[in-house]
Image (cartoon, rainbow over all chains, first blue to last red; front, side, top):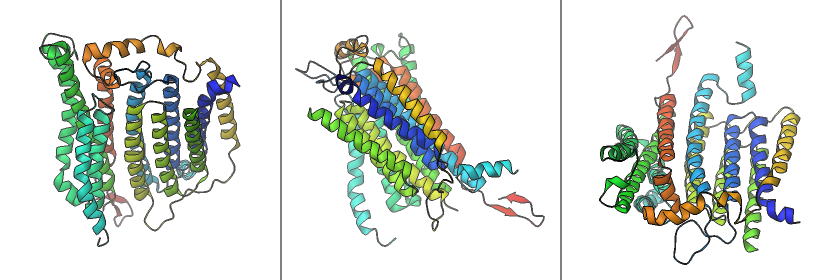
Length: 118
Length: 139
Length: 193
């Protein structure tokens, strides 16, 4: 029981991670793959922030009378990671637009068939 | 489009409020949640709302894409330039202590200028990407 | 107690949304659910006391990412076409097995992590107390995350601004111009105008 109370947050976040990972490797539509990749990224951020969370602590903004703060270092790392994630998503979507113009479809199986039949 | 009279009037009321909120978030990032990235994204969302309601041609008269490209580079130049200013005034690269008379004033000035550079770059790049997607679809 | 309850409720909603994204075929619904996912995760970040991160995730995930995905949908599917993915021909057993094996290895690996919310874990001991104590006297900025981002770890933020600038340049290179229409001349070859 103590094991569940200590770790339930991590287990649920890992289930989310695996849901995103499954979307990336099993579905063949390119837009769904990018959505799955974003789900994977957000759940990794949740894992980091859960490690930095302190029970009974406040947000890391210095105020009078507050004794316990959450760890500010994961927040900084994840802020950078979110912005890099949106840059990657924008670039991936631009590539999807170009693939559609070149192949006429965005289903991965059809793209492979067109490539192999050349 | 004749049907979006409500949209036009409501967005004319909302867009100045969104821009003001973006400036508030940018300059109060020292004292509460906020900072450069959030402010840049909110600022660009005001112009994206304008483009969605009034059309891309009107939006390009207000913010010409050439200006956006200049602003994007200006933000990165501001950030790197603050580092070089630290070098020229006798300290190390990106050391804010030497920028003003006291340590704390120098840190305040350095953090303000750096966050401003970040906000300008993020806002212009989001708008560049959005305009590129919209322009590709027109023949 | 209430904190834990809100935590578990938000995580359950997130899992239901993720499973719905996997199962749905209509792409417009997938994009809308993706936006809801981002907003729910921003709420979860607030419960975990990460207010800066929640702000950025709500603005970027539920704002910019959704708008760009809708623009891509408009560009890749024509107006009258049904915006849905092709139904897969066979159920995918190999990805499911890979996912289950990876998930169980990760869950086994979490037994080494400190307990959730522990104030004496190894990540709270080394650098974080230094930043929390010294940021006010050294920089005078109450928001510790901004002080670390802009002053103590300023190099990383410079790299991040360069990354976002490079992404803008790359998108401009890929789809910056109007689409070239291809015509065939009399010999049947493609010429581009």
